[in-house]
Length: 174
Image 1 (cartoon, rainbow, N blue to C red):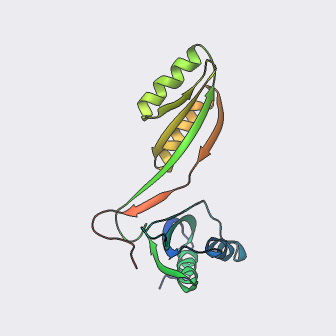
Image 2 (tube, one colour):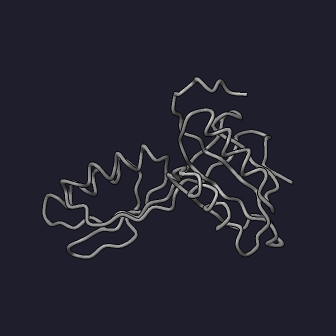
């Protein structure tokens, strides 16, 4: 049990395996909003061949006590099968997808392409006045690329939110 006097904040990537049925996501979101917890990122999708189970990945932050409360309350929700704090349970992979639209001409276009190459972003749409780049990576990598695009002509960003999975043989299963 965490020390209640520990007020250090930390980020947490929490994976939740749930039944894939109507209203489950609303209950998970309601748990956060009803208690004033913030969701930094949220993704959800079916993960089994039959479509019975979905995996929700939530990135949040708080004190150790708050994170433990979130996990305990998620674990009590029906129809939650399993809750895992990937940030504590060992090495894990964390990725996001972003589509980044940059508008510009001349040297700004050349600079955008040069930076995209350095960051391994892929051009998925191009006009004479704009590019749309597709990029995957952790949030810090995406943030760095997006910030470099601002002075060049950043027009729009769409991000998926984080998805995460444990490295090695550990898995989130029923």
